[in-house]
Length: 272
Image (cartoon, rainbow, N blue to C red; front, side):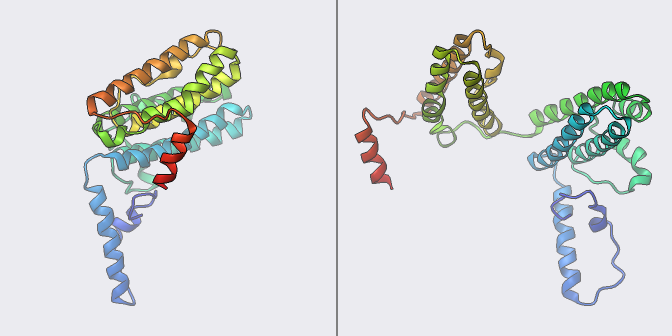
């Protein structure tokens, strides 16, 4: 509760202690309460966005279960879980907590500053939907709005590190050693599954870079993927590598490369 990774923060923050057997217990309790209050007093930041993302991921799992079921009881059950996890995602986006419990939930959630578009309308529609198809349709709209809000707030409040010598170093070499050869090879062989698996590995790596530092504005490689045109994706990746190399030059970084395995072995053994 003190780290805000709980649905029951109010039990710590708003609790009135009527008895304690030892002073050390109340001192520890007060320290935990102060930790929570200090975190809640902060402006919206990367921590609360991360907590929100955890609930959002649970909501996505609920949505998947909902969409894969055809029995009305299971679909309703997962739609309820979906609403609950979306609510907690919203609460954490606002860096706050719920004070009134389930009885006051419908009113309290609407007081939040940041809410998805048409939140009240959509969650009521989801509650009132009568058939499996109706629930699935509304659930899709409901999920889209919370994902959109989270992405917008992530762009606004999750400040990335400025691009520096230290957080760019090694990225070009990583792209060369782990992805470049495979992407070219899969393009030549025209192996669709090989190409796809290599593409998503490269995209995952670029996603991690993009989430931590302002390296470049466009790292969405998958928009260029076409299993019937491997060359297009290959060229797009190589262009990204050229842009990274240009950043290297701007920051005074030099690419580490070796003319032979013997040279690599010599340098590696000296470093270790």
